[in-house]
Length: 535
Image (cartoon, rainbow, N blue to C red):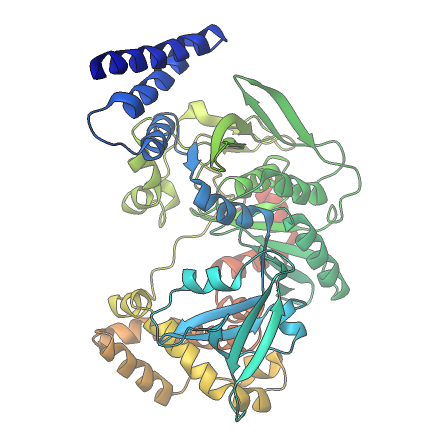
């Protein structure tokens, strides 16, 4: 009897899927569904069909291209927050130090700032749960503080100078995740904007920053896309639109099942008269390359730095019934000159994602002559017919080698063990009130603050406790960089990330070269092919 039931059930599984095939499923789709049904129905041991399905999807996508991916349902929200540019929570920037949650700063306009929560406050408990000395992680803090807009969470805070703990009931709200790291005047008439990625609100952030800089008499602009791995395409198109004249092609997409889609500029860009430099490096990819490629192909601005990564594939997200998502490559994008800048991946994905190391060991990050691209990838800019290349990123108009002069194993180990960041967090927290009394503005701080030898000695001792052995020779190699980063970290914790970059960029060679180019109209024009080639 049991055998008959087994045969009957097996037949029902097969017949059921035969019926689905009759509804129009392809033979391949039918095979996958039938295999999963048989595994679930008659396999000798219990199986996790959900896990098997995820492995099957992931394995399939890995055989296509490096950027078609499967995102489990548990990760979709976090992935989307980075692109949408907001999340729902209480609105603080925090850090963990010795199992203690220290608030670096409340996000301006957020619910925590509105309630009077301050930089330097320590969170003792969340929703009645003690969170100090418990080994809590950053992810654990985020899970407790984030939640749907309008919901409330009880937070207890310790504040220096207060006798009692402070209780706050915070109503969660939409919290912006800024993609613009810095925007400031780098000289009397030159502005600087650094973008960390491209999300829904990036073009708005950029436009608002441009208006602020114009109020400070900005005439020309440095756009820093170094380390910007991309994101949404549309904000990159919108920013390029501000730089170009009307009806100029910015980018076009094309794929086997995607007809050609062109994106062109509108007539009234806000920056069409400004001289522009775009900074890129091997960490610039995707949307960054769309913006840099449009600027380069129209001879609209000078691209400075090192060859970008080369991600020229476009993905669309497709939701699945369980909340998971497939991001599938549907097209390639092409710059105005017709270049596809996609780095080849026919030698395997592992090698593809090790592009940085391959370029480093080939000497490309130090010597521009080490870049060897075949003539078949050659193209020409639209206006001045300068020679450019596709097939592996955007090659800059002016090369800047990677700076290794300050590098040492000692500095690397201070960073690797988080000694430097944790020490400076504690140092700033201890001296916050004193610093803010002494330096009434960032300008006062920037001109008057220096890292003294006593602080360096304390850092050395902190490193020793973390297993970082002090080496005087190596320290001397890295001393100026270590002190600059230490000062920048203090600026970040007292003010914001904008001030961090104002400090750390002061001796940045790429920015110094950008200023040189923007301040020399003849050099600027020669680099863009309006005169003799620059030497």
